[in-house]
Image 1 (spheres, one colour):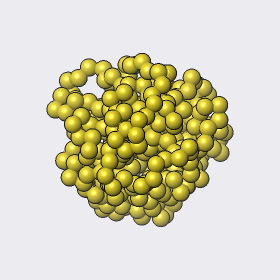
Image 2 (cartoon, helix red, strand yellow; image 1 turned 30 degrees about the horizontal axis):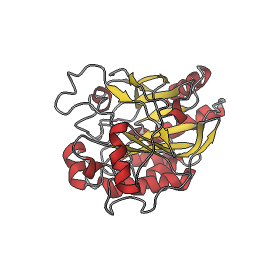
Image 3 (cartoon, one colour; image 1 turned 90 degrees about the vertical axis):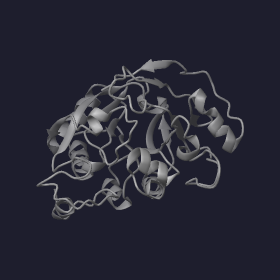
Length: 303
């Protein structure tokens, strides 16, 4: 860790909260300390088709989070912090292990609170032979300055865009200023990697935006629900991609729920969506044809 990064973490300002704690002495608002903490790493087959493909996505689930979502299905990892501290060489070894297992990519899930450690690990993994694309799978509650640490290291950005309503963001995720912060972060991601590029139907470089739809709150959460509060005012072109998901645990019952169910995404004109979300797209763009490929429900482990 270089001197500049160490200075950032001694009065932490990595995320928009800028809580200012010395991460070498105590934990920040996110729960993270000086060392990265990981819950698990494994092949994951139920991401978007261009990510999981047939060989799976090599996911590394980081503990803790910069947001506190009331509906989080991985709350034991993100909020309870379950996991084990890992050194930079250990993180790099995980990446190489997943590549050896046949993963199409290395998928860093909720690593924002450990951005410096993740960046260092990617560099080390590249030096040791990592060839598959690296994905940054985040909630978009990030600072452009912090994302610049990843420039040239991350190939595909996979951010959520969760809210267009600041009050909803504070109520359900304790994330003040989320809409503007996420827009700025996503624009920085796009500056770095551009539009999505595929090879053999697998993402190699670019941006995919996941749009969260919460039950009864689509007009406060999905940025394509109508009105003028969208990050981009034009209809996406042939190189723009979105994935609409309702992958959430029920409010007030997440600790007692069994295995979560997630609608596997469907591709239609470069948009993946569950059938329940078609009205959201249609309201903004007109009728959206949905193909029947990959339309089954699949179980995913409730971690």
